[in-house]
Amino acid sequence: QVKTFLAHSRDIVQYFIDLFWSQPRDTKKTFAATVDIQRAVQRFGCSARLAQCCAKQAAECIKSIYNKEERSVKRRAAQKKKPKRFRRAVQNMGRKPNYRKHKLTLDSRFVNLSDFRNEDSIFDLAICLTGSGGPNFVIPAKHTSHSRKLLANGYSLAKSIRLGRDGDR
Image (cartoon, rainbow, N blue to C red; front, side):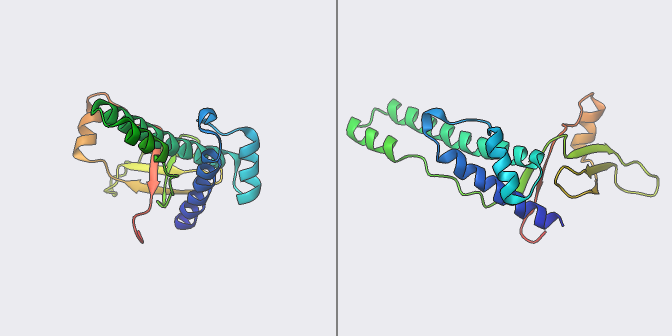
């Protein structure tokens, strides 16, 4: 069930990457319009919240490509390359990302982190995935010694997680 959810969300993220990439670069958005969200809901049969989550992840991918390009252009300008080569390099930069990973960042609308303290259990954290287009179940987890130390010093857990699949696991 989780594998199919991650594969389905990967397809939605790639759809939004294609959509954002096809727009003129000057007007690139960091969010999806309501029309785009509704189009993804109809096309993939997902919830609007899941479509928004995937659109946000796609926008982050596009933004990271542009930041990488800007750093590269600045580095080349600092090296004072020949202007002709520099212009050609700037024109050819930026390939559309192909999202192949089975990973999705889920925010507080999809996930609830709570204590899983039970005397018989070795787990001390429960990751509860709730509706809104995603699967409903609980994943038990263990804190690391580093996270226990940080929690003891007053830190708190984030309200989002990155759910992913590595190979067949």
